[in-house]
Amino acid sequence: MTTAVPTLATISLALADAVAEIRLNRPERSNALDERLWQELRTALNWADATPQVRAVVLAGEGRNFCAGIDLAMLGGVAQAVADADPARSREKLRRLILDLQDCLSAIERCRKPVLAAIHGACIGGALDLVCCCDMRYAAADAVFSVREVDVGMVADVGTLQRLPRLVADGVARELAYTGREVGADEALRIGLVNRVFATPEALRDGVLALARTIAGKSPLAVRGTKEMLNYGRDHAVADGLNYVATWNAAMLMSADLDEAMAAAREKRPPRFAD
Image 1 (tube, rainbow, N blue to C red):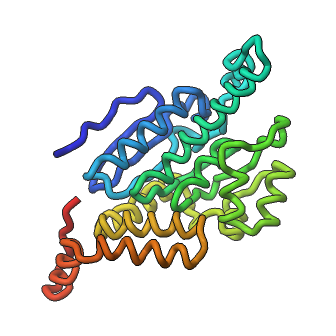
Image 2: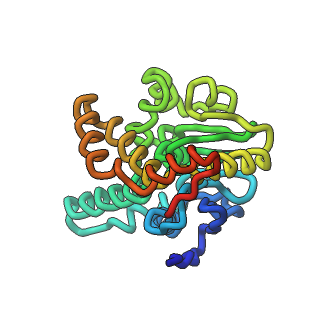
């Protein structure tokens, strides 16, 4: 059964060859994250997670930039949105707003399918929070990264400070967070923020889609389980991770995918896995 592709106002969706391409689609605002885009991002990732025909996801941006971060109009409207005669209730509303924005990005990690970020142009502030949630990050040569929150007098609060130090050296993460300085694609590759740099945005799209199709050709059950184990292992002790993967494979190892992979190897043909 094919799941219908949702129609969204700020995101374009396409599904081909078992790869979902999710593209931020506010190019006139450099894909700045307004309230609708935050919410629709979660909707798109929930759709990708729930759709059996999706085996991998590419997250990209329309126009000249990947994403310029949070829309300043949205940021400027926060005080009015959380206003209350009682200061304590106002602060409670703000906390709930922050937690909801965090959840919109955490939907990327919750998605059982690998999410590959294809980044060109600006990847600033909230956009860096976004790509830090992805499984892998790839950049065009023109990509520029920055933890920009410090420059507007706030602490980054939707994931960069928690995830970036797990991707790059702690001292590097601190330098970027304290200074807000820009990092080009070559430096991003050198510090381990991105996996690979492509010469142009067009080469980036082609290369990342090719990688996603390679992943989509593997056992979906094994790929989903591998993401589950990697995410769990990141946040737990080695002994906990070993125990979890033993339990997982006790349930999932003896599968139709295992039988098909072995049959394909014997018959010297590509495997054909069910979704």
